[in-house]
Length: 445
Image (tube, rainbow, N blue to C red; front, side, top):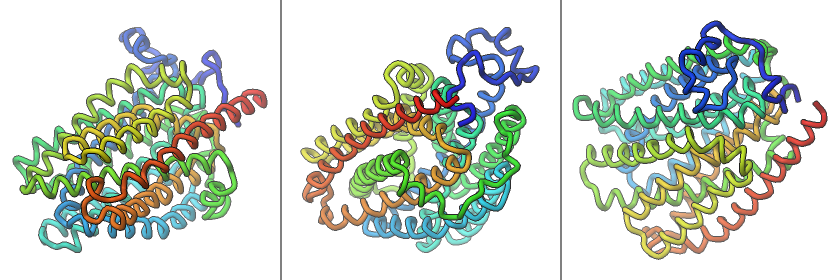
């Protein structure tokens, strides 16, 4: 694949005047990040785009979580099923758009569409703040929105950055998202004391629009890598699903994410149950969720800036992948013995830090080895249908075996343990697939 194993000395020769002067004025930046002069402006644009994107999401995430708690844990697993069904409808629609329209138009048009949705939800929820149908609809929409916009972001990254560049730079790019995830809760905690939570939707819409504008600038900064973006992805609308079931590497990515989300949703539903029982005030619940997000983002940012690239380059993708199921296994054991709110909160914080700082960047590095069409179609199918399929499966399992008591009195832990074993095996095999594929492409180039 073109540019799949580009070496440091052979990196893009395209340099903007601003990117060429940054190292002279800020030599500390190149000491912090292993970046070449011609990459700096595009790297900063990628950072800014992800910052605005996750700021937009993390501003509304506590609002979504609060609505989920207010609707009740009995409704949550049903809502996750609705999300999954809606995903099944939307993915062929996305496949149609990716197949028929130039790739450079796909992300901007979808981001603008979602920004308009936020304005509409603000109007509806402002007029009917107690409407359970509107709250449930927003919960479903927000659960779809974050997956589509983040998946499209990483599709663009894997299109514009090579495998070698991704190994060096994805940690810093991920830090842009984490910085946004840090800024979002800070803004939420400040604004929720002055404005109603629903008013935060307008702030989110503005940030999403800013992220879209950054994506346009990024394509201008990487013209050689964006070559061919004026063409559609091609193929059929269900190519993404077909490739997942026929390509071993994609199948293992899907299984890794599916099991990860089953375990993660067990934690999420257990947290919702305990928060509803322990915190009765709506504003206090929003503050709890945003405070937890703040803790996750602070630690994750430090790891992404100083550790992610080092782990990927020194220990490889396999170690980064294994870190998440190992963390999940520890969390399952802890909750099986003592299901307290502070424990589930700590487990979720640790699991999300490892996911964002190590496992997710490792998965995204693997995607750089795919074809341009697969970077959009396969990645979108896995990031949406497979991801939310894990949510739906976990929700029903939790409802059936939890008996209203979650880890404390149900068989949830007994079901989670074998899943974690499968998760560990999948991570190890996926790491081997990546190593083999990277070697094949290196030889072919």
